Length: 544
Image 1: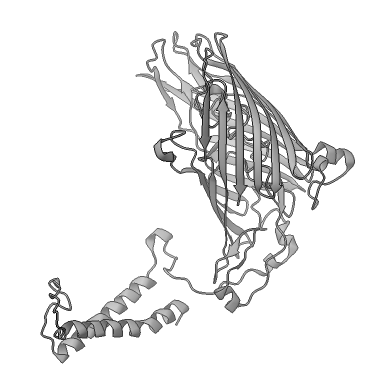
Image 2 (image 1 turned 90 degrees about the vertical axis):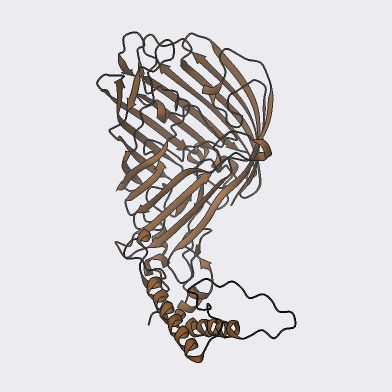
């Protein structure tokens, strides 16, 4: 008899005895001074008749046992939503594979603790995008978990495979909860369309006058993560679900109105990752230490459902490719704003990149291929092939110059300091660039001739993050986006934008951050008119 059946067998007779006593009590005439009116008993209930003989009790007890056996069969039956091989309860002890107790398990690229798609130096975990400088750029994965007996595993919560994770008692699955709580305070010297993110495409053109103060907590984030070792090639199954509340209106009565927003939902198995995740065209570890949540307007930023494969090709060198959900973000309106047709998205996007991961930085070169379609009202579909390239570099200049390592236990301020660079160019790349997403700049239809062509776009950004010591740092970021619009587009069409940020951070203890940042933005339209804004942005955040 397995553990789940033993558990049910040990509880069956006390439960039946309690029910039998209840039946007997219900059938016994009341003798109390203040009689309580008899309860209404449903027709067909075991308590329906008030006059009960001994044979009735025996029959009812037999029926109760039959129902208990029926319940046992239902509990042992598989649940369809979990697949035909999944029992309702699985109490069998699952020891951790022997490989997890070696240091090499935490350093190998494939089949180790860390998913191969989560790039970092061997034996380390990279800081998540937008978490901030209170968390180190890379966190060690050591030491291996402690060996425990079956009794200890079934009784106690023990350390899991990853920092901050725990082993589920009686299983080989490690679980971790992580995220951050953030309060932002913002003062706008000029009007801007988004109250708690510095989005340069939302700058009013022509220039407007006005000030605004706002506070926001909807950027706070929560994630659930698991790791389960398997016997299949010693690969882990890694799952990750993450979301925030950066959804709905920026502020609502009573502080509500910010529904949960799904950011990531994927699982890793060996070389493969499936689910909603960062695009392979994107470099999620090239994020500067900004107080602003939006980030550089030229930054490549796209999360979407996709399937990805990542393969090591040389020591610390990787190649990745993906098939991703398509979306054609085009402008197809006439001079009055009436629609000329619809976008067509019947071919997935394809992305790839090459990456080198070192202790003092990394390099990544990515490519993108797209098919963007347009079907005029009452006409045939026209398709155009889009392509783009993006280059990324992150490095520690003083560590390279003085031959130090930022991975050491307590690096100096100079060793921690970083340079972050990115440049992107392509046709039909609009929705992958931060400021161009949702602006209809993948392609444009000529409102006079009806001709459909893709839009060429380019952007670049550079950041320098300087640490004065382990508690204080500054970040300086400049970013620019330029669009080459097609003929006969309205003068109010987006043409270019600039983004400038300068910040000062204080990290009094690990994971706790306070920041203040000055932001300057400019948007220029196709007709040459522009608008400029300035914002002062403060932040208090704790990452858990």
